[in-house]
Length: 255
Image (cartoon, rainbow, N blue to C red):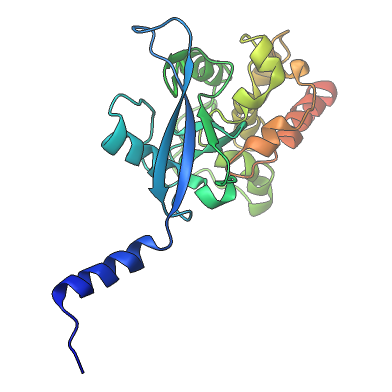
């Protein structure tokens, strides 16, 4: 019986590693203010495993095809929230989106999230988003002397706001909101979610102050309950429910 040569072994190994690859077209909305005033679409074709993530494809494009492609990413595991973008018209985290789940037989469109100024390619100016977050006082406020022991809280009290502690500030919910697209002064879902997290915390003493902040004309009453924010949240937070609970607290002053 003949022994396979090294060339044949290498060919077999190559076949086994490439047989599962598919050809995918990524259609990316490019923008460079130093080159042109208007954005353009650019196509890139890749041979890639459909079980890879969109973020892996963007890395491959940047590292092998076009080093000028600009996007944000950090942890690549759905925790930092920095790689939120519109993929096939829907806000998603590139690191949590598998290529096989976004119709790879057709061009996959990738563009920056809406409602915030695009700085370059997929990178937007996040400052207005973070300013709204800062404005709702996203920290525990208590009065009196510094405690000598931990501030205990029952499991039931914690459960009251547990869902809204999951926010990773990716801006996917806020930039999926039609009201935010049309009026950048609106606080947006993410800021309201983070206010909710402290308004309903039994240890906090600034609930009334936060409610008054959200009672502003650009606050919680601008929400039109389209559920875009809930659908866009990569952490599965019931964003619309949280917004409704803040509205109810404003009306009843019970929280």
